[in-house]
Length: 236
Figure 1 (cartoon, rainbow, N blue to C red):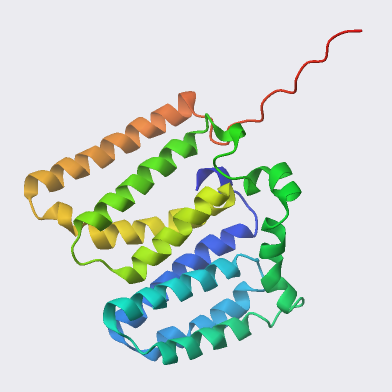
Figure 2: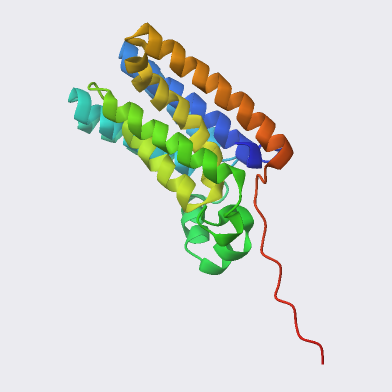
């Protein structure tokens, strides 16, 4: 999240994504519908502070889709709930245009090429950026923990895959992926605690990587990379 952790409305999206995920988990654990319906006013507020509410809709949709696969929940009831949440987001000054704005923005190549945070992480300007290494490491950890866990929670695996894809598609998605990642790792990392030695070794490795990564970032890191210098023109 570090490249984008500064005061701008997109920080509301990071917060509301966490709240949305919490409400979804509480709804799954307790089966109390009040948590599901609490999403309606949340998204109505969200749509009036930042366009990242569209990412929240993606989280809800993939979470409920995974839950249906995993637990055979009533998709009709979930579909109705999603429709009501989506309609609540239209209560904003721009109505449907607020919902379509992120799609229009990302579909314009010239915008993505000239705005640094909309570029793909595969852009040459980010070749030496620190967050590329972090993204690769976190993606590898995500894949390993999901594969090694026999009881996969598809309600978290599908959102994890979606937000990992969005983080690769655009650096703007890195902060939202950072919100979803701990939940996926936490729900599937229990396999590491089955043996005490593996559990302590894993915990020690995480601490070591955190310390080493922090020191490395402070001294040698290039969090956002940099544009290559313009070609020099020969003198007349």
